[in-house]
Amino acid sequence: MRVCDLAVCQFSGFEIPTSQTFMAPLPATKEATFSKKPQTSKPKKVMKGRKRNDLPAAEVAKEDEQKGVAVADIEDLFSEGETREIRESMLEWYDCNHRKLPWRRKEAEEIVGEEEKVKRAYGVWVSEVMLQQTRVQTVVDYYNRWMAKWPTVELLAQASLEEVNEMWAGLGYYRRARFLLEGAKMIVDEGDGFPSTVASLRKVSGIGNYTAGAIASIAFNEVVPVVDGNVIRVLARLRAISANPKDAATVKTFWKLAAQLVDVHRPGDFNQSLMELGATVCTPLNPTCSSCPVSSHCRALITSKQDNSIPVTDYPTKVMKAKPRNEYSAVCVVEILGYQETRKKEVSGSHFLLVKRPEEGLLAGLWEFPSVLMDKEADLIRRREVTDPFLKKSFGLDPKRSYKVIEREDVGEFVHIFSHIRLKVYVELLVIQLTGEMSDILPEQKKEVSWKCVDSKALSGLGLTTGVKKVYLMVQKFKQSKITMNSPTERKLKKPRK
Ligand code: SF4
Picture 1 (cartoon, rainbow, N blue to C red):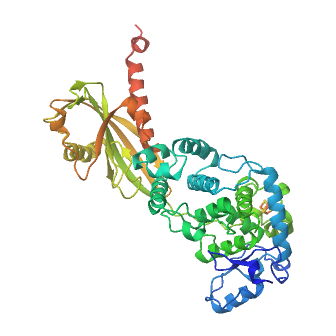
Picture 2 (picture 1 turned 180 degrees about the vertical axis):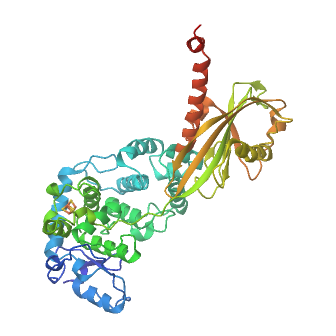
């Protein structure tokens, strides 16, 4: 094999073939020796290798095993013939079956110019970040709105975090939006153009191995693999790998397998084909193996045919998620009637008090109704014991001297689930009429608390998190139900018959 036929994979240090003639024949595959139940394949330990460019993959793996670097079992590797056939089948399938998505290249569209490549790289970056933890159907709309507002990385770099958060509202995991903005600023500030290789992309704030691989391969044709949840599922099934897919050593194995498969002429399309197969055919619970282009290479399928007590869905091994911890939040929606903008000297309708969350931690820097975290379940009295001092300390809202209570009601509660937290949210509505000047009551912004008052129209237009929207909706419904209850018709209906 010529040395120029190999490129070094940036993730595994393993050489990726740059021609279709790759490996020496591998030992027979494991089908004949499969155990009844998926086994945990133990990744082997080994060291940094000597010069390996001229060695076939099987020998490299053996050498690694002896030296202690965590690698795939030798039987997990694809043979030369399998590699070639999988590439061909996947690309053919992808060309005919991939979903038309706004961030994907149109049919037969050639990306030639540098400007087009950068445009595409930016689009891939935005879409990939949005797609982490979010379904494609949901992302399409967000992506289109985002690209209409910030069609280039330069325009995004000029945006504020607040604008970005507003655009992101509802997608969750707001840290991703912040990283996109920080990354855009970094790229523009450095002035070296859009990074085009995995190595340079990895230096950008918030871009990890996966996103770097996706951008570099899809937009710049760099022959690098990508490994996300979909790719892990496909590879785990193709190779019947039952080791814990979250283990660092197993993840390394998946990178190595993906690096072995990636097509040298169409790396971007190949990577997308693996992800697309995982998303549409080789799904977690109902894979449609009958329409899978690589079913003839699938060890999980072979195993399941030999023993129907081992379905393909046994791969990859399911990892028990840590139970989310319980948290409790007492939210007080403060509605101020006749809110007076001191500077404008005009009295307008009701306004809602919003407070900005701390710049670090969960939902960092986002707006919400005033709330206090509690350590356990709490009744209304207990909640008021904590929210009242909070309102007084943070906003100078003191019922004895600064406002009159017009209405105060317990609106209800709901549970909001984050990936690691089960948050029980208690909602109370406090409608008040200020008895003094706004400026006396809500003092100047304190360093530790940022707040603002907005009317309901502005509130609806703000990019609020799903949890805050739920609170607002709950309050609106509550008010609506009270109006209905007090309507003359309703009162008439409720009147006891004589
Ligand atoms: S044959 Fe089935 S389990 Fe195997 S890769 Fe294809 S869809 Fe997945």
